[in-house]
Image 1 (cartoon, rainbow, N blue to C red):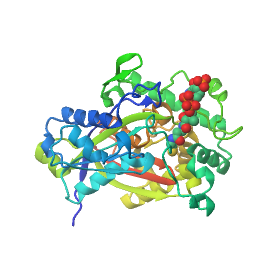
Image 2 (cartoon, rainbow, N blue to C red):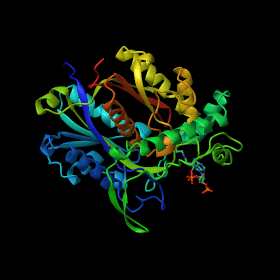
Image 3 (cartoon, protein in one colour):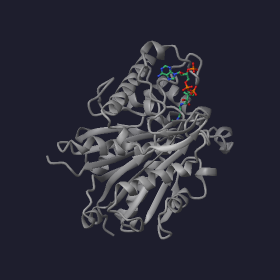
Image 4 (cartoon, helix red, strand yellow):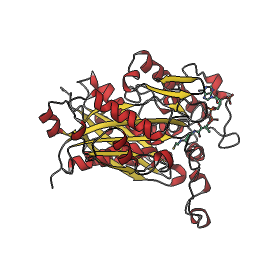
Length: 396
Ligand SMILES: CC(C)(COP(=O)(O)OP(=O)(O)OC[C@H]1O[C@@H](n2cnc3c(N)ncnc32)[C@H](O)[C@@H]1OP(=O)(O)O)[C@@H](O)C(=O)NCCC(=O)NCCS
């Protein structure tokens, strides 16, 4: 079986809300958020008729309640895709949406289907992290993992222990840059273009959720210095240098490059390669390092070939370790997270991967001089996920 080239045509997301009663999605179902995104993808791409979509893959970390009953299938039916469109759900926690993308892309590459939608949704308000999980007690009784492995903030404190040269001040400085870049992305109107406004019911009545709720452009080093360290007494990880708890949905439209040409549609990103890798669960933020090395090696590229890097910011310390390993400039590198990151936007787990791919779409749109882009993220219980893409608009 010969693999075919796979392209991303478009990507859309909801605004990211704050999880909990103060969040604008508190009274909105997670599956309705997925449906909104699917319908918007179809609306924005009239060359793709609903009956052409053959597969709908969705990631979610908690697959029950409004994120249950095989979300890929339910959201396809609810969005008005025909009954012929199959659907499934995948889970790789933070990389759930990215796994949906590589799963759907692999189906397209192997000729199992021509056109697919792949996304991720997480309503962390309705499904607080780990709330209904029942981890096997043997994890702890048999010392398979340290107790820290189950609390992501503690794994970030462990990374600070592992790399003592990364201080709390550095984590805070990095976070300010994330906030500033996000503010710039909004000021330039680039973020708004990726968001489908959604009318939602809140305590204040009906509102339109069209901007992320979490960004704090006013963040200062003094403000960050005063924050509590919820994961360790006198620790280094704070609400200001962590991603938050959020609700959101995002997805991309994928097809074979052959199909895109047939339909006269421009595929904008060509999948060049991807890889997942595992590390010790108690240092889960280290995951992007081996997954990136593996993805680069298997794609026949080096980090110097990558023009744009979209790195998920679960915690600042984890992003800084990645920068250090791959020789990126601290606190800002001209290739990294140019439109900001999860410390500002928030991180509705499975919804973040497609957001990173969307940022590549946006950044490559007016840069035919840039060829390769990468997304990378760490994953709870110790994994890394990296995808590498080629700008189809590259003109050397
Ligand atoms: C760190 C964490 C526990 C904080 O949760 P929280 O306490 O609900 O967060 P909040 O947004 O209410 O912020 C707490 C305080 O910090 C303040 N704060 C947050 N960011 C700030 C910033 N950039 N500047 C100034 N103050 C800030 C808030 O105003 C709030 O102050 P208050 O208590 O006076 O109201 C939570 O965001 C978390 O668990 N993050 C990690 C998520 C995660 O593990 N994801 C998976 C990754 S693998």
